[in-house]
Image (cartoon, rainbow, N blue to C red; front, side, top):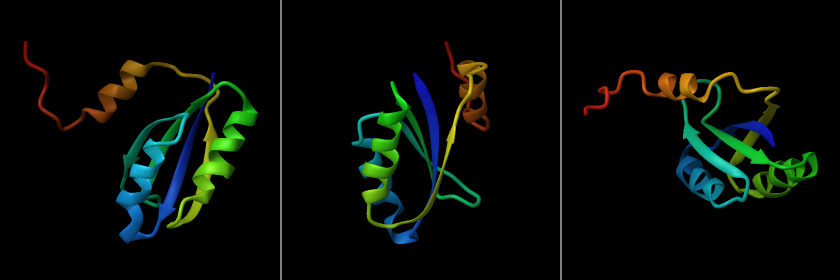
Amino acid sequence: MITAFVLLDVEVARVADVAEAMTEIDGVTEVYSVTGRYDLIAKVRVARNEDLADVVTGQVGALSGIRESETVIAFRTFSDRALDAGFALGQDPPTG
């Protein structure tokens, strides 16, 4: 599997619409609104480079409201647990 992250600079009024549309694209597994240079980051998981090209240039690139994008391809995953823990910072710990 190929994992990539698509970083999107989006028109402010279109952020929610673009995020919602991204969740409907096959291969897009997660979409986050974020602070910083980009407005949205989407995680894409596909089987082949050709599939990644279709998702990024064919489908994401066709969405209205995107001003700029950057795609980075992951070489390897070190730990999903570490990533999940990072996103949970500031949240109440699970009870039970």
